[in-house]
Amino acid sequence: MLNIDLHCHSSVSDGVLSPTEVVARAAANGVHVLALTDHDDVAGLAEARIAADAAGVMLIPGVEISVSWGGQTVHIVGLRIDPLHPELAAGLHSIRLGRMERARRMAADLARHGIDGAYEGADSYAANKQMVGRTHFARWLVAQGHAPDMRTTFKRFLTPGHPGYVDHEWTSLENAVNWIRASGGMAVIAHPGRYPFKAHQLVVLLNDFRALGGEGIEVITGSHHPSEYGKFADLARAFSLKASRGADFHAPGEGVDIGCLPALPHYCQPVWQNWSELEQHPSFSTA
Ligand code: AMP
Ligand code: MN
Ligand code: MN
Ligand code: MN
Image (cartoon, rainbow, N blue to C red):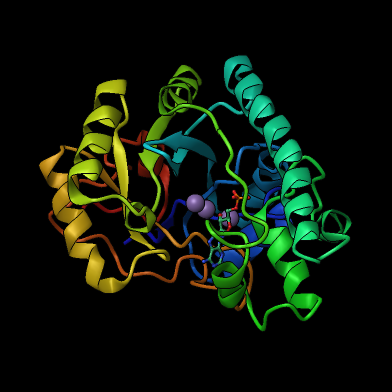
């Protein structure tokens, strides 16, 4: 059985390990096939490719795109993308410009609540200066003693109704799916259990996503409680979406580690079902 993990982050977005270190960790954890899926940037994929070739890990080029849909932020993972595709690259660049502007507004909001210096603080935690995000603000807030840990930080700050949260318009669902498909990739809805949608809104999202050419949904992810796996496996089947598996790893000691999740339920059609490159893997087996 192949250990396939199709969602993780490096220091190119809000992870703490370099792309090389992420790949080395995946190899050490027994992962055979890994997708690096940094938020809104593909700048880590070239380095990850070199490390993966050296470690004997099969690297799937990926990305996690921030989208605004139904008044909420939704994340769309792109798998088997071409990181050099001009339409995808231009789209991601435009999202990063918005991100930089949002970071300034987040810092201004924290300053209004008496917390000064947050932009410089968050920036000091970001290896990629175009990618300052909520995780970097959260790490700085913890270091400054404003909250004991990341979980608590996101309860007291950076979320709707709390200091540091600002509305932001990401790109559309249509753009994200189109860019991924234009570059030859497959679009997958990330961690569906994390969105605060009512059941009927989730149905609309899945229908819209399918109509736009989206093909997959995460079933087994570090963002789902094990009690949710069955619900999203059933939804995947009901909407003829393929199922994905990924830890959404960001940092050692934070959340689930790479490759350390249960297998997909047997009745799911995996996103990798027709990926011919997997047949080349020495550990490949159809059993
Ligand atoms: P951004 O894309 O900058 O809005 O940041 C979103 C990121 O914040 C997610 O990808 C997670 O890494 C992190 N995040 C969001 N909510 C939480 C939470 N409750 N606990 C820990 N990390 C979180
Ligand atoms: Mn993240
Ligand atoms: Mn996400
Ligand atoms: Mn993620």
